[in-house]
Amino acid sequence: MFTGIIEETGIIRAIKHGSRSSQLTIQAKLVVEDMKTGDSICTNGVCLTVTSFGPDYFSADVMPETIRQTSLSMLKQGSTVNLERALRLIDRIGGHLVSGHIDGTGKIVRRWDEDNATWFKITAEAAIFRYIVDKGSVALDGISLTVTTTDTNSFSVSIIPHTQQFTTILDKKTGDLLNIECDIIAKYIEKLQQHRSGEKKIDMDFLTKNNFI
Image 1 (cartoon, rainbow, N blue to C red):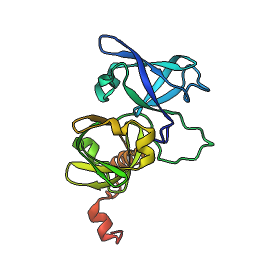
Image 2: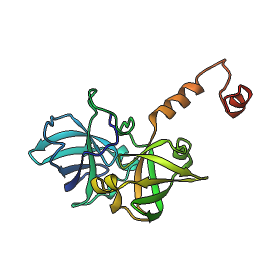
Image 3: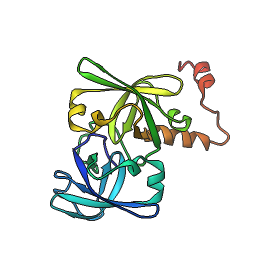
């Protein structure tokens, strides 16, 4: 489990391609300080398992399903990636709970600046967009962000200077893909609601009739 607060950016040192998989070797400094084989490192939002490491790098395997569901296949030698070590229970959760299990990708359709903030407008498939709510949390390439606005098939986020400085977000341009992980709490609530046999369905009509909205 992660928080979406990026610890550092790393550089892809090497990529070894399989027929449908790959192995990444990533140059890093902070996340390797107390590293062990088998550790989980959130890499552009994707939870990867450390298979080997050295003083300034680590390697991880990327299986075919991860290649299909994320933008990791677009990485090249020299690409910069967001890195975060797994959450420790003694840490403050500055962002939100992030599992590193990507729901899919979204495309940047617009980027613009407003004073010290940079805005991104992102489109996503309906299966992802159903979990995107105004002022809710979303992880984009592993970065915990607040959804500022939504419309029928897109949402926007506003990036503060600190996030601009310490993540890869400003490397992204219109047309680029971002790995999206929706709020895990919303997905669990939906799943539990689907299996509440014999009980009243909680929908907008139910909430209205019972004075919740």
